[in-house]
Length: 178
Image (cartoon, rainbow, N blue to C red; front, side, top):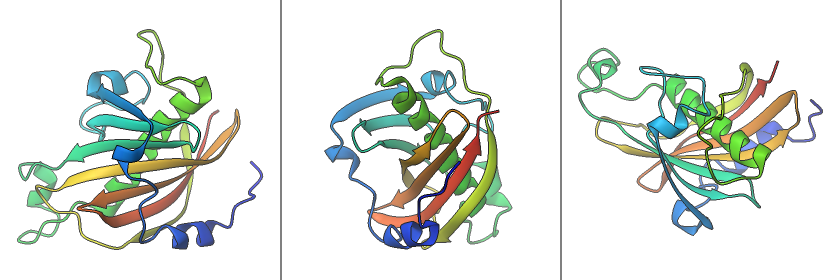
């Protein structure tokens, strides 16, 4: 995939400001985990997106949500006494939302058909990431993904995890469609 993007510059420019406000995106969506399972090749306990809430097809931006119950087992062992949601899982959730975005943009749709199948996909690289704020038990994460580049073989997405209007994580990810 040709890289026409200054990866570090792109990451730096979205370290502090959200890609979008979900309420401002023009297409309201309400897709649950059952719908998401049709377009993402993950299942419990690895499916991390709870809901897809909004889309801007013109800008190639998608918004999703995940609330973090304090009862999630990983909180008992990830920094006991002061639990935080792991950065690696934040990158994973950005990637999963990026796959959802690929579905909507690649098919030029705002629906999830009943017979659609998840793509065969492999992560190829984390181009970069910044972890700026903690994500804690009880937080609601707004996940944002913006399509940077894609073709039939590769995709690149810029994503953020936003908590209480603060960008907690920004990452640039690349996948291959074998």
